[in-house]
Image 1: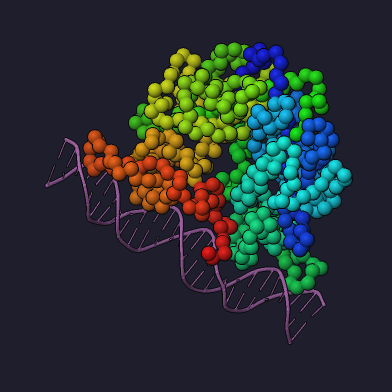
Image 2: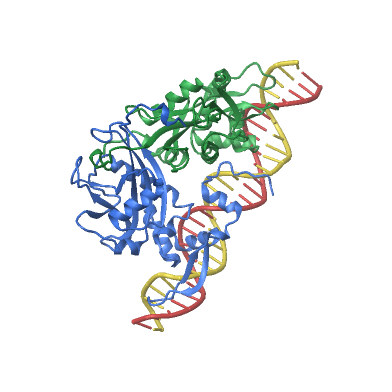
Length: 244
Length: 244
DNA sequence: ACAAAAGTGTTATCAGTACACCCATGT
DNA sequence: ACATGGGTGTACTGATAACACTTTTGT
């Protein structure tokens, strides 16, 4: 890492933080699909276009904290899952000035998404059929979608869309919505149970018709160290570790 | 993405690019293990400590290009594989000033690593037993190692350590060095052939004792769409597909 | 009673693994 | 000829996919 005394006097490159947010909401047919909130740009350039929530990085704020703060301010949402996605820095991605954006991706619970403010400057759109966004944001969302779909299978991602407790059918619907294909309920059940990531609550979901399903809770503590290494893709970065 | 007219007048956060470089070199017993080149800091802070090659991001240079350039200038190496790793931005990771580092990781061929300059300010060390590095660079290398080891199995990473043509034994040695465990030669051969990523050159490696092995070349064009899917990432669990 | 979803059992298939064995060449 | 690494055959194992089947509830 270099240091300040090696710098030219001015540094016209700007550092921003943005976030791609995903939530599950029912589409017109009632089945859950991925939606993402966008905010309308209120300044030049690209005034009026829809864009990802974000902002400049304050000098004294952590990257992840800046991501969480800006998405809360603009959309009112509090993410249940937040992870760095990629850093986009092409010289010409913003007209007139060099902007490097550290982009995060976030998952929010469905019910929170339903409550969320959707004023004139916030708009939810299906993640698979986006309108034309500002800057290179279409490309960014597409990359985030790809990451979500390749990662949902081995991390504790799916349950970030759900509440504290959930049924196996609800969990399966999350997987089906993310992966965009049906899954065998019988096999899905066994795979999930075998993963040891779920704990029974003892409760059953009441109120609906038919046989009441068991309610489960997510529980990472039952993982063996070996299984955790392979199942959870949490980079060692984000785990507590002795100083090296 | 915000824009310049929303900025405070000065922006004391600095943007740097660094690279973790891996190459295979024989250890004292002759078996290949991972090595990484370090450069000595010639300025404060942390003057004299070993650090990752890197530098400030020039306003008109692409991120990846800056990574390739700085590692070439400091170590003389030209990477065969270069990919963004992560962006490190903790407020206190550099004393005195906020530095956000976009870190890349690179693989170079073994023979190039052997040729490489190793002057008084460049030093190669085994990647698994690093000395104390400047800033948070130990943590960065550990993360890069983790990424390499989890990714080598499904991407065209291994052949980046080798020349244009190579034997299956050489390719297997790369995997063994990266994964740090022996692999069954028979099964390794079949797995690689089945992947359709290798093409026979028709040549054989001469000169060595014993039966001359076939020489192969890496060939991504022979991948089926299905195999490409799996190369990218896909762990099992939900590979169910409607029978096609 | 019955429809529908929850939940269980069973089998075929396939990828990964272990390891016995044959092949081709330089010495 | 023979030692050695190159290369092939084959059987075992465990995870997954497909789907028939039983259970439990609300209506």
